[in-house]
Image (cartoon, rainbow, N blue to C red; front, side):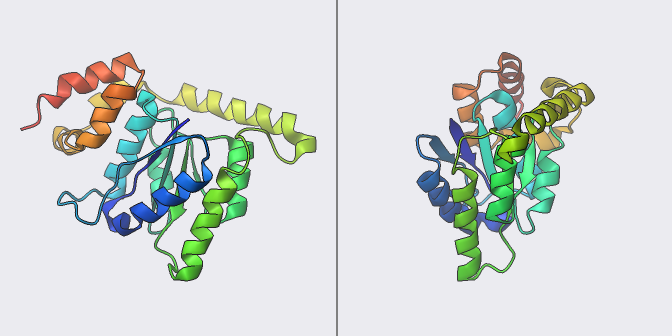
Length: 212
């Protein structure tokens, strides 16, 4: 599994802390931190960051994204706007465990601006630990696992029916917005190197030359 850690600029100071927690508990996974970083000159909103996360997932460049914003809610809602992304809001270890076992999504959003004293940092680490404590998608509780997994599969089917393709989606975005996202080179380079969606890679390659 390849896991991407990606935060908006408002929470850039917590990028290293979150990355280290994922690296510690997602044993056997390749973990890549894309920032944003406190020293970065370019600022990215949670909307822009959510689309970068979506591009990583839609391309297949990563299998899972760990992200967040001040409340965690906005990033979750934004990530769920994109084709093929199923993002859960995980404020506690219990929520993280249940999301991984029942919903089996490909992204989580944490509330990183709420009460971040020592207790907030400890809760974040325990949430990441619970998220990766067992293989995803086993169903919970165990005596209802089959029904839970059927419901999860049906949800994915419904989402796929209600969404356009990734290239159709990108074609509808305004040029200035896309130019800024395409200029985040660590994300774009990794998508082109590691992604396996030929249509998305072709779209990105064709449009990256338009950056002034």
